[in-house]
Length: 409
Image 1: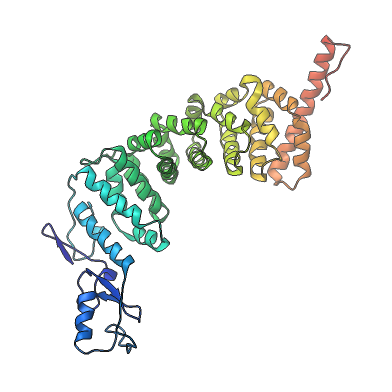
Image 2 (image 1 turned 60 degrees about the vertical axis):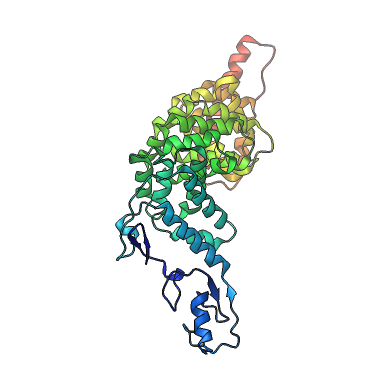
């Protein structure tokens, strides 16, 4: 254990010297691969010993080399003690005393988080180590909640980047969701600020974190109730040109869009216009188009979404038709689902006209000839039926008023 502010803190086993059992200050490794504190192993060797203390193997060489990675780990871990993480009893060793939470200067927080970010990315094992630091996630959430003096955009961005590194290893997602969305922390306000003013990397991290906590209808609704979050997410897919960022944001929107009230709110905030722009844009990544289609299929389930898709001469509907069989099977399946919902299930006349103008019949025939899943095949058949019926009625109507010419379909 080490003593910090009159409290005893458990030292990780692999940070302790096998000889002295104290926290290593200058870790060095013997040829056997075992690491010791320099002063301890030097005394052992100076005493005439020619074996490795831990393995008792005979040493062919008494030379040792600095273990720089481990030293860096220990330095960062030690620095977190000065950061005074607000750990709880179950996060500490059995004989350790919990550390109490205090306010910290913003610059100290930034330095600590910056050190973690400098340390982690180069090696996967470093990231793995970060994921094993118990109590790290609550601290990062405290930073995002603006506790103490940690209330500036730099701290928020750094906390997001570290949290993004460890999010996949969070075992209790429900506890994570509750801590972020249902505690007295105001994390969403900070995340909205990062989406608005942060770097591309921190915006991507924010989208991933939001997707990570969107685990059920309640969490999706809580996120959507923060209008700043939704507005910033939609704004990013409408104006940003970084496809990695756009795909991360779309993935986040897909995750939170399942509840009906969320779908309606997204439509009201202009998500259909933003998605249509992406749909009509050239050289868009496959993953982006697939997620655009998924969101459109979700929006087609509410009347507000269907109405918006039929605006501007059915530009959005025509765009979906043109992507069928041209991007990927996943994109085609989602497009067929959306078109089936709008045209067959709810019989939107403007959509039917837009599908016909975009040569939808030919596209659906291609889908039916492909090896598509049975539900998609059935939706294709339904679409073909309603499109042919609509085509005949439109032709007859056109013939009644223009007897000299019949519009071909």
